[in-house]
Image (cartoon, rainbow, N blue to C red; front, top):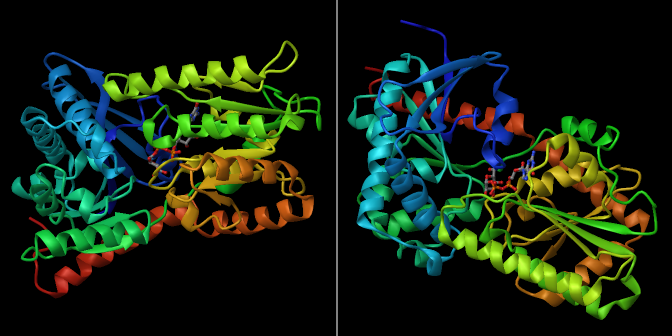
Amino acid sequence: MDRLERVVIVANRTPAVKSAGGLASGLLDALKKERSLWFGWSGELREDPSNTLQQFSQGKLTVAAIPLSPEAHNRYYNGFANGVLWPAFHHRLDLMCFTEDDYTGYLEVNQHMAEQLRPLLNDNDIIWVHDYHLLPFAAMCRGLGIQQRLGFFLHIPFPVPSVAQAIPRIDELLDAMCSYDLLGFQTEDDRQAFVALCRERRPEIPIPQTGVYPIGVDPHALRREAEAKPVVELWPDAGKIQGIISVDRLDYTKGLPERFKAYGLLLEEHPELHGNVQLVQIAPPSRTDVPAYAELRHDLTALAGEILGKHGDLEWQPLVYVERQHDRAVLMPLYRQARVGLVTPLKDGMNLVAKEFVAAQDPDDPGVLVLSRFAGAACQLDGALLVNPHDPGEVADAMRYALTMSLEERRARHRRMWAVLCASDIDGWRRRFLVDLKAVRTQKVKTGEPLSA
Ligand code: GDG
């Protein structure tokens, strides 16, 4: 028996998969330093995925990755996780598309992943499962006799009960979630929504311990990256053009069309800004197999064209719209060059871009964060200008205010937010969750539950 404790991360994707997204970039840096295993889908699709576990090491982290068949992946990932849970958890029931077949596929992949993980486990492992792809994973593990501690962190919001009740099979999913020992959420609102839903719909099922763990960043590392010589200088003529920057996965929850409309309104209402301001939107496409994403892309390019055609001229482009993904080494100095970070999701679990933008700023001459009040980050970043992303006038006013804000106010707001980033960074997030997960087990041992198989 291996007596050393090891953290086992289970997530839809392993870090081998290169793509823009919060989890891989958020957690990986914090994990390489300790003995740990990261288990998940390799990103590979194979007609016959059996007996094809790949393992490799990155520092003290071992990555164990499995492929999936195209059909299983389509039902689990595109179908149920991103066709039902993602829209519904972001309050977009209109985009939810449920089929029985996708739901079965979702359960089957969770079962398959639990089966593949079982032989890799040691007795003293603690298992930390991530996100909505794996809501029933603990129930599958318990069914297989896995008795190690199992914690779960939800990276996206949890919907209020009136919305959650519209999700087909929500009761089964709640029961399965209650097989975890600890359930972590980004905000207190998310946690309360989950508890309220359980009390309402499943009063007979005991709710496991719940907690609030807002995910953080590594502010010092990000600041160092931002201070490096810029790979791209977007606004070299300092003072002439003020930059506004937005970086999002191309996703309907991120409020991109609403943002473009607000920016169009700003240009209409403030002709004095013409030639002096530029919005750079970087939006790498994601989940391109889900129909709602293709429609969004179409609408967005039309809106971008409208802004350029209506307001631009031969010497000035009011908007730069880029779908290509960029390295962090490019992005961080770009954040630092911008006067405004525009982060206006319609709903977001946390939003790491908001935190990355703040971390990247020069404290002596910082840019201003304009942030949706519906991002989890709004609960923490009290130095941002908080806006309702559905109200183009309010967002335009905030942009205008940010562009003209005094240096003194910019510094004061940035100071407050920098302190928040340092007080709740990514390492603290990981440590707090794991400390609580270990404590849960201790309590269970005291109440007489078995420690391991
Ligand atoms: C989910 C939740 C929660 C984006 N474009 C590029 C790039 N990115 C990086 C950003 C950031 C990450 O991707 C995006 O994270 P977000 O938090 O903004 O959003 P989601 O992907 O929706 O993440 C979210 C998060 O999980 C963590 O819990 O905050 O609420 O929805 O780190 O920088 N990175 C690079 N090039 C790009 O073009 N290198």
